Image (tube, rainbow, N blue to C red; front, side):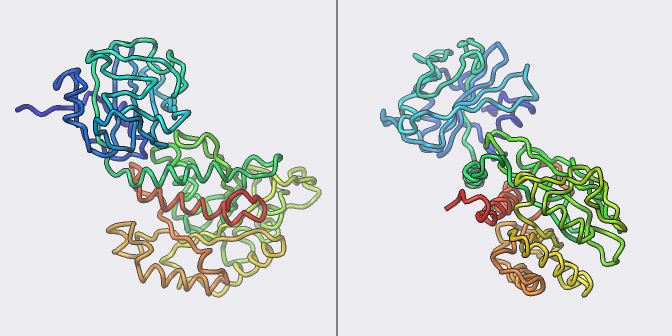
Length: 426
């Protein structure tokens, strides 16, 4: 018997997988092979867990529906708050897929055929779609180009969805954490740390999570002196999971031991207070002055820093010199004086522990990682709960769900640390 193969091309598969944070897809049903028949669909797809229906038409649209529930041919309305319809087409390759959730999750789909109320696939056991926006509100032109004749219809089991659900949960948490002050659209997090600790890499990694592919927007490297010579504010473009990203990441020069190198404590204080604008060029030997044309004399809350994040390579915790520890102490005191929350990110956890390198899910089971977290907690004088382990994207060509989860967890902790300024989470 010949193997049944997917009709998704490489670009289409990547688009579809981006909706599930790149979980695996396993083909269960293909109408051109098994028949445009709902009964056969149920024979192939019942009790398979989370599935996605993928329909194709001659107009170049790839559209369909996802449910996290089992099909069981019960004939009942099924509650599924994670169900959604989607669409993309060859003419809009650079656009994010259209994603439409149900206005009433209690009626996500009818468990009899491929019936998502507003879209019914294989309608009357034929190569057609019934379309009537209602429970799911959408523009028919954008969903399927008003072309209801199918050239193909497939159903895939979505595997590894545990990570997708966690990722979506984090995404929903991010949306709930929009700053509660009307003048502030995004919380601002300042990344501070020694040269080569992974500050810029952390931004690139967070950006990659939302883009759905590995992105290298900020300069990174292993030079002996800081590659970041400007103050930069990086904004994350919303992806398919969230409509608004309630934070931005600010990058600065790396910390260095010598007095006239690296980020100056006076410049650091000016950043915290909102006096330094984006793209300001640092001069380590001369901090910014109030009479400088670049100095923001009247910063608002939206210009200030809402959480300071110290970034440290976990394998170098024991190698921090006394001068560097003292410098951290000076920066911490200045931050405390301004009442700004502080966290520590421990990067490169996979390089520090073979158990974690084998499986990132072991990061909180690793005695070595826990020991390093306790050491940095003691050295810097922060609580253990304020120390967060992460892995950045460095050499990878594709994103990974387990890496994404650690990264998003770090962002959620930053938002939670900012509760004093933005009381949005309970």
